[in-house]
Length: 93
Image (cartoon, rainbow, N blue to C red; front, side, top):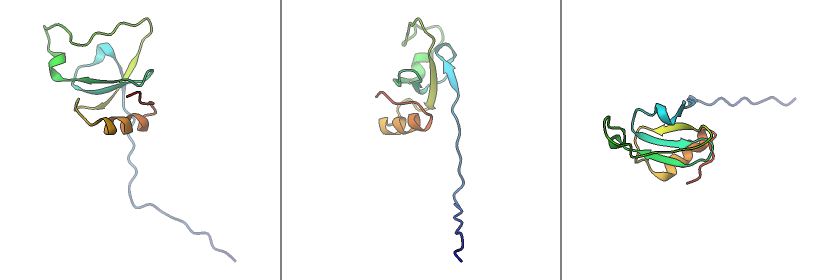
């Protein structure tokens, strides 16, 4: 009689789904990917200064949602692509 072999992984699996936010809700610097287009936006802290002109302005008929990939706006493109894929967003960069 054949016995069934069970394989148990010793590495813990830790998956975190990142939160979707709108353009108006961005309050911290970071690298963001737009869910609909897969475009990457790098938003430095200087772009979020209160009382200054916005450095990033997007106008669209439809609403778009973003996923923050990292608090570091200067992460590598490869890392940003991998994080996008892990969050079910096809990268377009």
